[in-house]
Length: 364
Image (cartoon, rainbow, N blue to C red; front, top):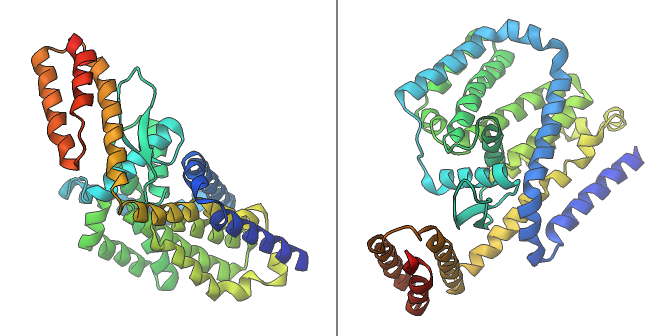
């Protein structure tokens, strides 16, 4: 028992060292290139454990509860019909879909900012690290992989997980009271305006709610059965929950309730691989929070705006090559547009624009 506790303590120490001890300049490359794979590993481990626990009684479970599952998704169809899906909070939702595009095309975890988007060009965008957690973009990227990239795939994610949220409300109420209250929980949850608002958006609120409810259900199962697989599933669910919203890391505090059960001698001897590695799966979340903290300080200076202008000029050069066949009048409109935008940021770029016009668009 002491060795297993020591092993887990070493993993936690190693995770904290990698999370908070790495130099600042390493954080963005590490997060950019590894964030997607951390999310993939966490989700695959979670899904595999769900299948392991439920596969033997999956069909009997569905047969017993299919009316509630059917009602949940019929209500989601009705909600989407009455309140058609659309982007509601652009600062969140479009950025989340942008990160999902990078995950789909490049398997990276950064937000594309600007670049040349043509079918016969490689995915080549300037990017930055977005402050929003990675689970929702990852889930959207899964549907990009199935159906091709579409901004509307975020609505598909919320439709599916919205139906599962209603079904989880049914399960929790049924376990606590009876089936009557389970069906009543479905109807009451679907009637909440805030549920309808977020369910037809492309934000991370519904996905976050799903994992909150799932964590409560798994905690109930674990306290009831004391099974080691339920303990591992609880840990992995909390990891994914921490990657849904900024504040969801606080749900780990809820483990205090289960500490007497989690440190039970009989269970500790049975802990398996997912339980020991789950602290390492939180590394992208830690790196992202550190990057967001440092970026908030840097953005207060003027150098941020100057760097953005340099990127705009580079992409204007790329666009000039594509506009060779365009007439002179259209090219002058483009140049005038850029020259109207650039001086707002108090940088003199007229010599560069004249050079671009002469050597790039001028050939048109």
